[in-house]
Image (cartoon, rainbow, N blue to C red):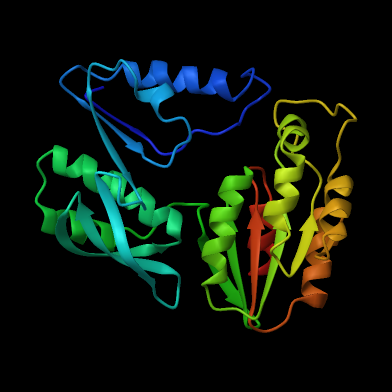
Length: 280
């Protein structure tokens, strides 16, 4: 490719990669495939950034929420639906105001990567800003499913602790009285490897219902369970528990959700079907 974007580098897919250094080596190899007359656009907040960017033949442009980055956002504000507006900066140059129609701080960061790419491609800045404002999001990323009995239902694909934090941080700025989360862990290996990180990310909700682990390509190793995860979250003081079937979860939600609740179904498996059934 002539242009490459790297948004994050963290411990993930540890059933395949040995450790975080192995992952960084893989990203360095990916970055090295960028054409020598091209550009790598990379999040400047990535830890050990030089392990990915050293000895590259292409140019490197950083973006993020820090003034040290080439492209960065300042004066960030959010509207009633958690969508950001900010002042776009390129080094010391003020490039004006950018407004988004997708929620969350993470999407402010993502938009900076898109802007850096589009400017490299020669698109006019006013066209870029218009395109960003018109972009309404993607399926299964803070996707509004509907409202029933005053309960707002959102679905999100997040299945890694960092993704979960990003989604729930956005949710805190979204209108609601209580945040109710149905979480379906994805793969036994990920749940086991990042168990404590999952607990820390999920404990910010008012209520958490944990569904059975979605096995995907894996078999149950017996090392970890959804029930164990729910119990550990409950130990932090958050109302959390495990329910064994989607029918049980749906019945619980029908009986216990209240007007002005924000209900999020979350996970990379088939948990979205719960929200679909509820808004029928």
